[in-house]
Image 1 (tube, rainbow, N blue to C red):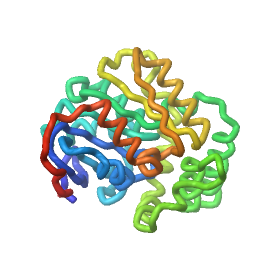
Image 2 (spheres, rainbow, N blue to C red):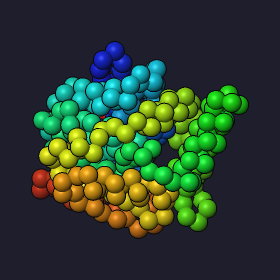
Image 3 (cartoon, helix red, strand yellow):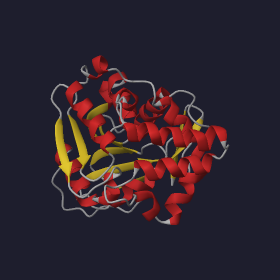
Image 4 (cartoon, rainbow, N blue to C red):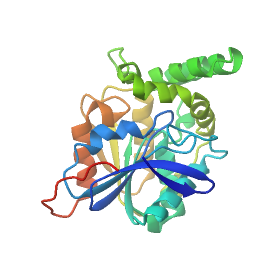
Amino acid sequence: MAKAAVDGIQLDYREWGEGTPLLFIHGTGAHGVVFEPCVEQLPAGYRSIVYDRRGYGSTGGAPAKRFGDQATDAAALIRHLDIAPVTVIAVSGAGPIALQLALANPELVRGLVLGEPAFQIAMIPDPGTLAANTAVNVDWLVRRNPEAAATRFYRWATARSNGSNQFDEYPAEWREPALGHARTALRELMQLAAPRPSAKAVRGISCPVTLLIGDVGQPVFHKTTRRLERALADPTVVEIDDAAHILSTDQPEAFAAAVAEAAPAPATDAAPAPAS
């Protein structure tokens, strides 16, 4: 792991390869490891940067006081690494972060690839989401058990239509950090309740945007993706078969192919460099 000092915190990140820069931003409750299966499927010609956001994983520290702080961190990391303009790949709760990054710093962002972004999720009346949110809050605020609340959220968010879920299938070395930063994830869920950025603001995004959507995950994330599709000027939508919400772990090859389509790499015969 390398470290970048940004705004009073050390962001931990890893790099793979050389070439077209890609910045991967993990969703609420996850950490950078969820992108590794995808990064390993990319062809040569990419410089992939995966980091743990403020309050998460190996970066740790206090949670972000404001949701916008995460976009500020991402901008600072881009500048620190001198990779602008960069294609930003974000999933789930990181979708609004990537959108805010592109709005506030358009010169830093070449394009966006967003996997089932949780765009204005609180604006979508969905009985399953409301029930899950109530149960999570009971575990957290009434029973004072943030780990149980986070586990409930992770299992719900990564559920498949056949009744299984991605979280329970992940190795212990993935699940344990996710429980370790439970309070950060729960706080971020509250921040995501605000409909930011607005649909009006999103219409001003000028860089190319690709939206990825799976076919076996929670219906509410399909709705948030389609909501964002309607707000954007001219997005590309790619449907990925047999994938639940964390698309990069269910179908890493298809996820990597969508990234490569959105951000073509220069022709090269070089082998991918090892992670730093």
